[in-house]
Amino acid sequence: MSHLAYVGVLAFILVGTAWLEVFLRTRVYTRWRRLVCTVAPVVVIFSVWDLYAIASGHWTFDDARTTGIVFPGGLPLDEVLFFLVVPIASILTLEAVRSVKRWEIGDEPAGSVVDGVRGGDL
Amino acid sequence: MTYTALAVIAVVAVVVFDLLVMRTRLLRRRAFWIAYAIVAFFQLVTNGVLTGLRIVRYDGAAIVGSSTPSDGVPPFMGDGRIAFAPVEDLAFGFALVVLTLVLWVWLGRRGVERTPYAGPPRFEYPGRADDPRS
Image (cartoon, rainbow over all chains, first blue to last red; front, top):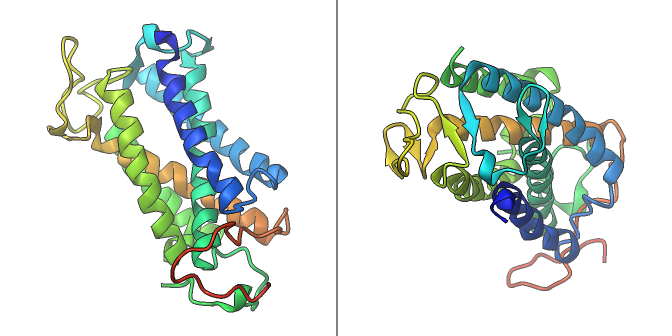
């Protein structure tokens, strides 16, 4: 079971944010194509950073508490999943704030007033 | 390059990316900073687990603080650490979140599943504004 320690943390993040999609209607998973297009480059860029850090010895992982599935370059699957899960949770959080506060986030059509509310700008 | 240097570069890079390259200007929006505050809190918690349990270990040569000890828990606070994690992780997390949200907003602005917008919530709560759509 201890091999699931790292991915257990990731599961906690996924489960802990999933309710936002249902109860705050964040509609992030609904817009899954946009989600994929957003997260894919993030996973690539941060995996490259991770590979450099691993090669440079910046950090190491406990083999006993990661899945043991490792990509070439010593990159654990757990880390790649981290770069997938944290962005999803971040988007859910931003859309949750929009849902509750009705503040603009910047993807509204130019000059539009969403929900009759402006004032997203500080 | 050290983790410290890379973390600083990453923060500068995502700020430039948001304000000047993509012009999404998320960093000027209230919605972003409220969302980031929530995400940062949970980042401290989950990262604290990963670093405090030494699932991820750091080399002192790459960070402001000392190496993760081989025989015990790293300091909760101090020696370049916040909630067990190196301060560099906060910058790493900030860059990860900003890059993600800039891309999300930019795609929406370009018309990639701009809608359906989020909301309204399924429940009523005190002080909720009337929904003009309903």
